[in-house]
Length: 182
Picture: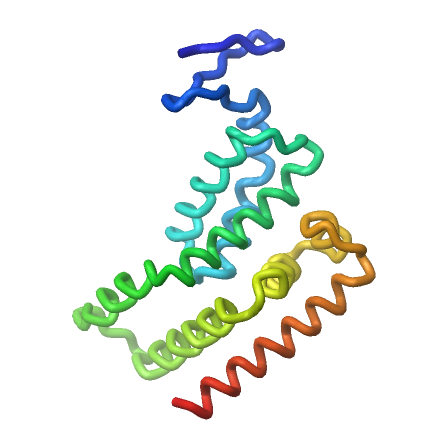
């Protein structure tokens, strides 16, 4: 099904009904790099981050989010969706498969293994944080300003620093707690 736009363009309606936003392409072009960056910061994989971005933009395309709030909404949605991927364990299978691929030899295999394990520990600890703290931490460390994080999470700009510091402290505690139990 096809619907007309005010600017003369055409918007294809999704199979389940409901029109796709007329501004989707413009928002996609402007926000895609940031959405992928936020998801990649959580997931550690550009390929998986692009999958998350696709999910997020599909939801956005059917939403009524005002265009002025799109970047913040998309950033938060990317962080939430990426955290959901971490928490759901979907990555476990790909990590196990990658670990079984002993064919590729790296000059510093031990360093690569240690770095991969450390990133895995940080992501697992991040997934155990309260969602609001985890999202604030990811957004801030993905390059969003305090004002942008505040707008995206509907917080006062003054509280962003406090939440980020608490999240960093909680992340350190999680890392230390699980390091001592291993």
